[in-house]
Image 1: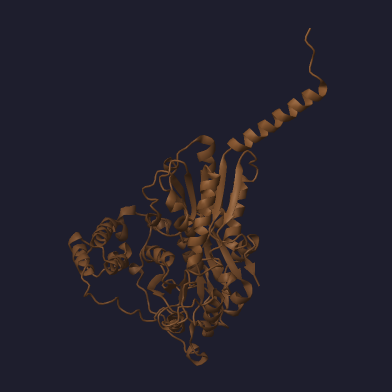
Image 2: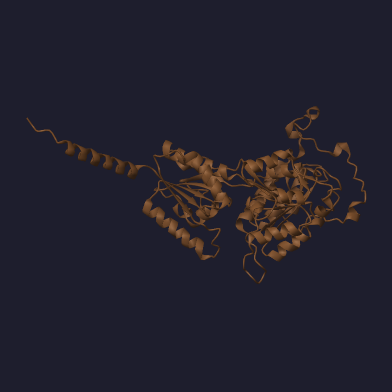
Length: 467
């Protein structure tokens, strides 16, 4: 009869088997790399991480690593390339199954080198530039969520915004003596007010009777022709002819007239749009925004801002009016536009300003805090941002895309790829659906601005209220 193994031997065998199983499990479990463009303590990055953790936080059967490129604090030109090479070395050595890459720098300096790489699958988030910049538009191993400005929420804030009587003179740039003059408002003929479906139950009619909708196919044709011309100035001029503007053109809205407008649009010699006279300025004692309040969009000339401007120009701002959009390179240019804003607009909308140089001869970047603090102090009209950092830099109101949504949506896509074996190309690329609000209570009060209470509650609930 064979002798049984001793107890110590059995213990050693059990221990070795356990170690081998643990090593095998950890070696073969899916590897996920979270690649962030900015630093861990940057507010946007922090909240994207929270969104990712909400989905991946209880997952212990994955090997997860985090890499922070920290590009927002290292602005010298060589740094992004250097840190990008370091991230690519990590990918080559660790060989993750999926990389969740956040914001444009991660795509530009790292992930675009792995387009259609059969060894790696890519999920992006927080991308504001065009996907063609990275080759993602035709890639088979890429999906993700785009970051787009939540302009509908911005418009709703404008429409809900009230201005206090005591502070309106300072906000609008008028002297107290001018403000004391009582002005008569122009009379509006009832038949001239456009009616939209659902606005009034007693005036419902067929959706396609709305003039701007009937003209939408013609406007699309104009845009297609402009894009084929491959001339940026022609594209911009064409986008200014929105369907709503076509519908208000002083002639019968037939295809012949649209063709004439299209021909004029394509002609570079057509003069600029007429200057809007300040007939709709905010009057003394107003409690709500006038319906035709004028908006001036202002930003630097960075690529992300250029991308945002396209959407700002084509967005339906009615019943507000986008009267001008200015992108500048230097801080003095920015200052001149801000100081003269009262003559052309009731509000300034700003996307980004972090690429402004000190002057035309000094390429040193002006600090974001200096830009915002000067602007808040000197602007004759209220200014609202479309990024949360506008408020953290010293502004008083911003409506931004939700970083929590970016993280959650991207993490769910990642899990679908890993757990269900879905190929990235089969997962549709999506874009921003949610927004968050940043508010600085002291600045709001000093400018005499008023918003419904739920805006402040929203900002406080998301830890984005400052005082």
